[in-house]
Amino acid sequence: MAFFPPRRHKLMRALFRRVFRTPYYMIRTAHDLLLVIDEGSAVDRRLARRKRADAEQIARFFTLARRAAERLGKPFDVLDASTRKGLFAMLAAHEERAGDILAFEADIQNRNQLGAQLFLNALSRRIEVLPLAIGGSPGHAHRRFAEDSAAMGTILTLDPPRGRRQSVEIQPLDAVISWRGRLVVGAIDAREEATGFLDGARRTLAENLCLWQIETGADAERLTALAESLGLRALDVLGRDRYFTNIPPEILKA
Image (cartoon, rainbow, N blue to C red; front, side, top):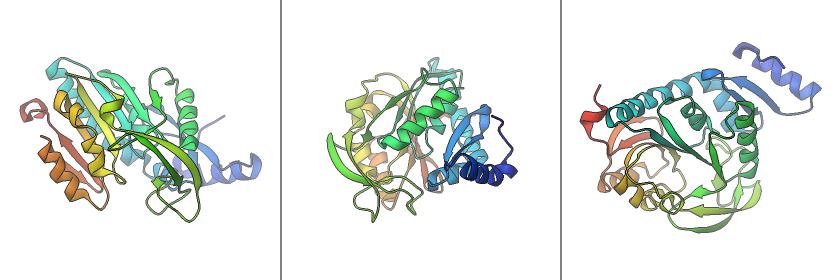
């Protein structure tokens, strides 16, 4: 199948709906990555619109990660629990200095979509996908997944008017990984449990050098205060994304 430039996306969407009877189509992004786009998802529509801007933002972030890895003489390991459908993890896989790469996806539909993307990009063996959500304490939550919410797509939510009900495993980050002495680069969606996420990552923060992009919600200021109390310092704010690190400034300095 041929893949077309952005100006032809509308034509391709119409073709797939009419001929193949599917709301899915594919686009190319940075590093010739193929993304499977679900026309019914606000997250995916945003990815299709912002694929260049998102890739450039992530690339700038990886510039810092690469600099730290070179000066520390170690690879950087990657956590992707963001809303960008695995784009962060897949771009990380093209970084020479990247080590272990973990992606978290609790929604089974999104997980299947991510699996298809990893297969298409020959990254199935490079990126490990964990079927859970990151939170403050372990357990299971019976929640609904909004199909197309105003908060940018398919997200965990307590009670949307319509949605798919799933039993979701939730684990603190400290219970999922036992990394120590590593350089950990992460993109985390913490809109639902901002402070809970950090509470569940205390050991990881204490025992590793971390460079994290955290997508926040209404309690962004509380998250920032907790992050600073855990030894993180704020680097930048871009929209809802806040950047934190505990890496010494001289290591990140250009």
